[in-house]
Amino acid sequence: MRAILVSLLLSSPAMAACPTKADLAEGVTLVRASPLFKVMYREEGGVLTEYRQMSRLEGEVRRASTYANALAVEQQESANGIISFDYMADMDAALKVDETGDFAAMFGLIVDGKRFGTGHYRLFYEGEGRVRIGDCVYDTWVLRNENAIEGMEPIHFLWDYAPDLGVVVRTEQVDPRGRTLSVVEYDGAVVGEIE
Image (cartoon, rainbow, N blue to C red; front, side, top):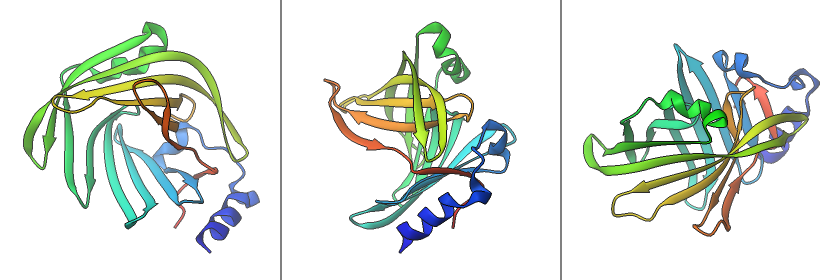
């Protein structure tokens, strides 16, 4: 039933305009109908916040995150606690990775207010792409992200970041050899929030 409702909402003529970065002040929601994955981004006072809702085997999961910018999460809060990233660099430089080719920063990892360890954030510009979300098509930067936290295996992602929207519109987790582990793609993008 939820998938049908989301499909009807996304096909409504009133929601035909494709969101842009200017719409982040009101909020932009990206949604995948099945399995449910809904994320709303809102920018207030220069701070980008993400509200995420997703279906998993254990039931519905919600998470709220704040970002230093669209390419660097600063804090994630969920039922499992609060994880924070204390970056030791100017993270706005990550938004120039299309010019520089790569970006790196060390960070401190803080879990529920206690320092857990340190890590290394790396971002590589792989080229240009295009991502379709429903009737909307966004030009993207294809980025490779690696996060290595001491004592843990590195985590690798491929991101499609849409500068015109100001957020990542496709995420693919890959293993160290580049093989796909999981993908998050969306069926629709709307201004505002879908209940």
